[in-house]
Amino acid sequence: MDYLKKEHIDFIEPHIWHPNSPDINPVDCAIWSALQQRVYHQRQLKTVKELKQAIVTKWQTLSQRFIDNSIKNGVDVLKLYQECRRTRRAL
Image 1: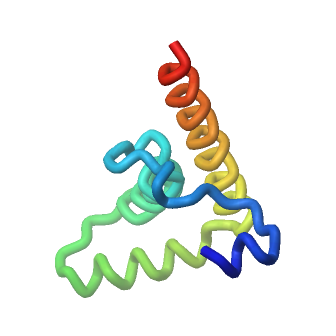
Image 2 (image 1 turned 135 degrees about the vertical axis):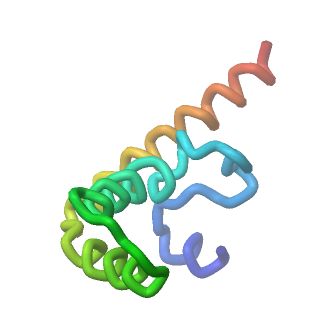
């Protein structure tokens, strides 16, 4: 954390994260949804090994732009959540 602060990297500190909300977690919400659709699209996987291979293969088809946008959107939602918490405390 100290390194990130020292280097002025824009991030949201862990104590601000909501503990159990997939709505504000970009990996759970957007990225895994897209990956799940790609893995199971017209495929029947019969073994765990096939599933693991399909996940790795399809992960490589996700564009970096999509991943970056998903993370940015998640950060925006997290900032909104943080602002809502601040506003509620002020009331």
